[in-house]
Length: 245
Length: 255
Image (tube, rainbow over all chains, first blue to last red; front, top):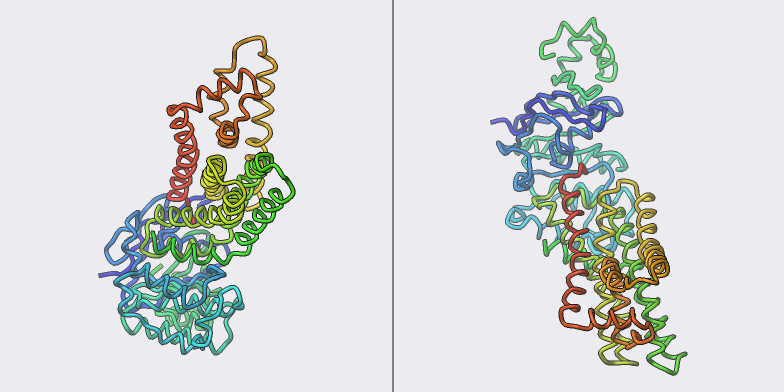
């Protein structure tokens, strides 16, 4: 069974269509890199899946559950936003406890490896207000991975992280994928997209232009890197050579 | 809901604004009682401070706090929680924290210097106003996406209820002074939570006699059990309606 099904998803803000008839299916154990220019609809797509934005048309199902008012499907989601903010006066430990309390029974099988891997052990008793932006991103990463989600949504996860921590975070994402999670990552870093993505979902003007493996894009264009291949692929002469459009 | 409420309260308990608000009220209340030999006069002055300051700070703090917490609220909305529960928890936490500051800042000095029914009335109306204006602030913050505009709307609301509404009532009373409009003034006063609180305190301090016929009308209506029930219901509605509207907006809103 597909983990995520996007069925004719559209979202309109006033007169602007942020998403138009997006149709796609994402499987368990798959990493999908969501890319596209600024304002292409990446954030809206992710927010629709998380239930934060209400679609104008179409629907989304996650693990067979329709995304709607019943919040129980979100128990299987891990989300790392691009910019994380937490209650400033709580300590990191209190924040982790708060989330575990909210998750209830699902917090039983927690994965705390990332706490030590990202060097967070010593920060557990620190006030969140005293942490730097990068440290708060690490806290956010820990929360996203902690409850062994079926669907991991990472919005520009390496932005603001030092290279070593960024590497460890992406390793954790690959580990989650091997354990059967569907991993959705938005990124502007083409090396990341090429290295991590089983498929690349390209959005432009709210439309999903393609969902293809990166190798296929490279093969179709004859380029060696995705950053070179993507513009070439998007130009008309290559489009007809690749299936899946 | 209670889990979110508990940790939000834990965060707010160390919030500098909430602590500063309690200290400001404590210094003001204690100062008034120390400087004024007559406790009743001190209570009257303090009630004027409370009626103006409590709504303003509850309104502005709730709006600013909501916007400061927005990213975290989004993260909570991604957890297996209903949006209604999140907002309810946040409302309970913010209004409890500010009510706590009010009890510490006003309640303790008032009960120490002038214990009695007036002190309790002042304390309860102050808490009531905190609950009302936290709900109003939450509604404005949820409905308005822009922080500066939301604070602006909050300030205009406060000015409207503290100054403009009274000016309008006075204008009506003067314009129609040759007619018996006092019975009309009673329901009009009940429509404004600050006026309503002022009348409740005024009746307790026994100042209604100074207002002549209007005071007698107030006394006759609000002094009765039915009038007290109407006052309590009006304040409860002032709290419930904005909160329900905030919840409706929050559930439908794109975060």
